[in-house]
Length: 140
Image (cartoon, rainbow, N blue to C red; front, side, top):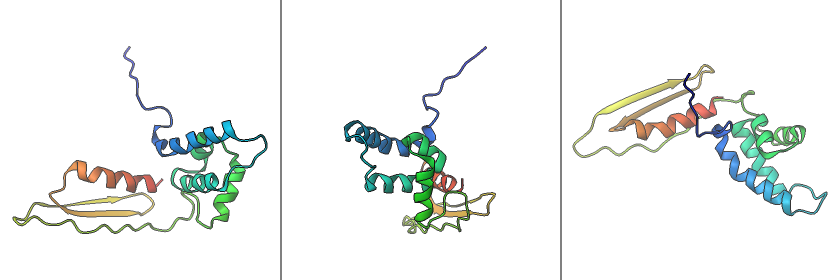
């Protein structure tokens, strides 16, 4: 039987939460007992919850689910996956080399109807990967 190990932990997908999780840990270690979470930390937590979702954010930051949910709803921006309208990102045009280049088009469509069309000249997989990952992350 062969076993494989992964260097990525169970929350590797939510690596963007780790710096804030460290800040929360430091704040908790140095605060006087009973002190409320500073508004700055709450604001960052709600921004990340909009990106990563409520449950992963609560788990990584060790927050109260209902407190973070209330702050998300008070912000007026819907949580991930609930009634979100289409997201449009316009990128500046890619400059064309003087000699011209091979033009390629990549089109991605998610089940919810979100669509990404990239028309690029001389773009390779390493150029497209960050854009595709960002698009897929917002479609969850």
